[in-house]
Image (cartoon, rainbow, N blue to C red):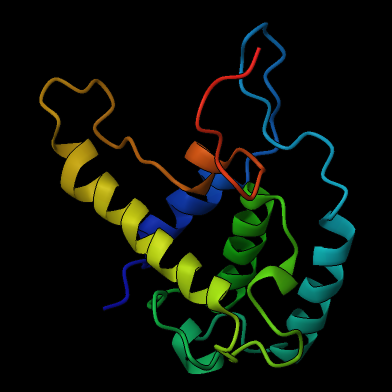
Length: 158
């Protein structure tokens, strides 16, 4: 089952890819100095060239071996992948073999798939069903726990 379609992918992208940094004391800073973006940009450019003219086609008709995504324009997949990478503070190579994007030999790729299912389930099956929530469209995503780091913090450091 593909869990991210049109609207939920847009919400994922908007929340995860936000580059706004709140400057109030004690506020969250989302990966303010992303030294890996240039590397990701190179891969995004490479894949963008490979799918040129197909950006508006269905993602699962343009890319191979998609197991989580479906039902939105192919060009949006690059935005989502960049957002996930930023949220974890990694580059594409963390999950993928460049130029062989469909390859599943790296276990991190399946972990990312399972984590995306987990965040979707938490959002849809739990968070949005909490009575009295002021934000009925609340969601969690990679950034909710990872905050630009591969390993989520288990405690707040002073």
